[in-house]
Each structure stands twice: as structure tokens, then as C-alpha cells.
Image (tube, rainbow, N blue to C red):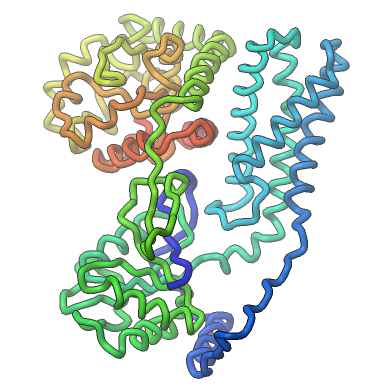
Length: 521
């Protein structure tokens, strides 16, 4: 049936789908006219006995090689100069290793490919470079410890910093000429399926902005009506296969200038009917995607294969051990130690401000549930009055979130200094001690209170499969502005799809989320 494209539903960056259809322009009218011409034109017949045409050879792409070479030299060159001027031993070898690691890391994370990426522009690419650089620092820290390198760690960090600046600048320059063509990359989607499937897919597409699929209309199958408001209906398919299936869907494509038909399979739209619809669409130059129920699985874990004429989707199991888990643990401990040393002056200043601004201890110690529901004592700077726990029962009736959590936007128990600490998330920094002790990770779900965990159902209890984190998807996606079910969905996605590279990207995005302060109270 041709290539079947499954849209990626990952939470990772904030990008641009909009629910309302665009006004038609000259470009879309020309595209519609071209599709109509294909519709009228006869399909070219190929002699089955004749040889298949040889595929055209593409010239080798030089852009990725040039970009990798730029990153390598952009980091290794300044690093050698700074290490050499700092009288560090073997500066050329150290700079070469750092440069090769940097280029290899950027290549492994797909920074040199030209495939479509869900990024809003140069800012997101810069954040991606910061995430790569943090991974590099972690790898260099592991190598420095394993090889007992004599290079001073502080000097090494300074030496590789110019490489980050150069990579961010180059990424922005690569994006700039393409930004004018950004609108052309958005896929205008015509959704086809039974009413329940259409409502579900339309609701998800319209509620998120981290993808390039813009829903323009729908073609329901059967007599049931759509419950979701605001979705234009471009026609209906009968409950049973009919001769006008293809013409009805193509009519919706032309009427709404769609360039992708997204099918939500169901009992009335599967098997031979779906295959024939694919034939008709592909023969007229219209792309087809089939919606998968694997909405909680990252695309990197899915591998399509064929067997006995069947299309199978192999799903890799979530990471629970192995090299990545060991690297994550090493990066957690190393990052927590460096963070505590680097932030020591700030931590001391905050401790003094908490102690002098209100009566009570500097730190708030609280029992939380960690990995596999094991309790541990979590540390935070105190942001509330000393008897806050006793007052919580009185405020339960004005809780502003659903589920087992308790949150108030204007909690009267929070002190003036505590409000500032919460706004900037500085009150969470003592949890670096928990990370250093192995109770927590730098990235993961938030650790619940014992009474919260006791109310978890089987689905929510899965959040405790991994170590809780200082930051995570909840932190970069709205924090306290999220509903309980949205928080659980984000945490479950992380539990099943985490990786070291994704952790580094979340750490970089956390900086932007903390600066923005959205959802922190």
C-alpha cells in the first residue's frame, strides 16, 4: 500500500500546530489545481515484463560533513589555545579528543541531518546545542575520572565553552535561510475515521503545539456524529465499503487544500477497504498516514518489519538497566557534586535569607516516596511558615488541582521570601544532596508524599518505576498549571521513553522554564 507514515506524538519542544484552518492563498490554489490535474490524468502503465527504471543517483551531501567539521574545529581550535595558554599538559591531545567527542555526539543526536524537525526556530536550535554541550561535559567528566587526567576540570570547562557558542551561532545561521520556508513544512491534515477515533485524534492534535500537523477537516465513517466542536466535516463515508470512498476523501483533500490524509483505523475502516483507499490516494499524489495506538511510545523505540505479508511494529522495551542507566547514574552524581560546589555561595545566601526573614529552620525535610515506592527524606529550603503541615487540613477545601496533589496559587502559608524562591525554583536546589546520595536523579518524575502514593491506582503507581527527579517533563511543560492527569501522562511517557540524550535536553529546557517562571507557585 506504499509508505505508511505514523505521526510522532513526543513531548520534547514547543512548536506550531494551530487548530483553525488557514485562509486559502495563491500557493494553495495552485497546489489544488495540480492535484485536480493528477485526478483527471490517466495513470501511466508500466510493462510488467520490462526492466524497472534505475533509481536516480543523488550527489553526496556535503552539508552534514561540513557542519561536523565546523563543530570539530570550532571546539578543538579554541580549546587548544585556552589549554595551551593555561599551561595544561598535552593540550593538543585533550582538544582533539574533546573535538571528536563533540562532533560525534552532535552527529549521534541528528544535528547534521536535514530531516524535518519540530523546532520553532533558532532559539530551539540553540537550546539543542546547550543540551549537547551538557552531555559533552558529562562525558568529559567521566573520561577525566576514568583516565585520571591531569587537566584542571575548571579550565577544561572554560576551554570547551567557545565550541558551544560557535555551534549555536552556526545552527542559527543554518536555520535563518530556511525560516521563510517554514510555513510550507506544515502538513495540512484531512482526518478520516469513525467518529470516536476522529474525536480522539482531533482533540489531541488541536491541544498540542509540538508537531507540524494542522487539522483542516475530517471525513467521518458511519452515521455517528462528531462530538468535538470546531472540526469542519468535508463529507461522510458509508459504514460499509463503497465505490465512492476514494472520490469522497479526494473531494475533501481538494476542498481544504490538504496534503496529508490521516486515517484512524476502526472496525469499519480497515483491511481491504483501507488498502484500496491507499491505492486511490497514492495514485493521485496524496500522502497517507495511519494513526497508531502507540501514543505513549517514542518513535525511536518502534521498528517496522514485514513477515508473511504482514506489517509488524517491533517495540523496544523501556530502559531499566545497561550502559545508559550506568551513564545516567554517573552523570547524576557528577552533576550534583559540581552543582553543589558551584552554587555554594548562592546556597549560603539563600539559607541566610530564609533564616533571617521568618522564624523556623532553614531547611524543610519531608518524607517522600522514591523508586519502587521506597521512602526517603527529601531536602528543600523552607518556603512556608513552621506550622504549614497543620494548616494544610484547613485549606483542603480550596485545593486548586485534581487528583491527590494539593496546590494553591496564593497559598497563605508561603512566606514572602519563600514565594520568590518558589518562583525561581531555588527552593529545590538542596535536593542536589538527594541526587548525590542516590535517592533522586537530576531528571525524573516528581517524588510524591506517602499519602499521595497510597492513593495511586495501577497506572499512576508506574511513576515510581524510576528514580524521582529534580526536574522533568512536568517542569518544562507548565509545572503547577498542569492538571493531575496531564502530569501523570507526562511522567508515564518519561518512565517508558527516557534516555541520557533526552535527559540532557530536558536539563537545557529547564533553564528556560525556570527563567520563564510559568506555573511556579
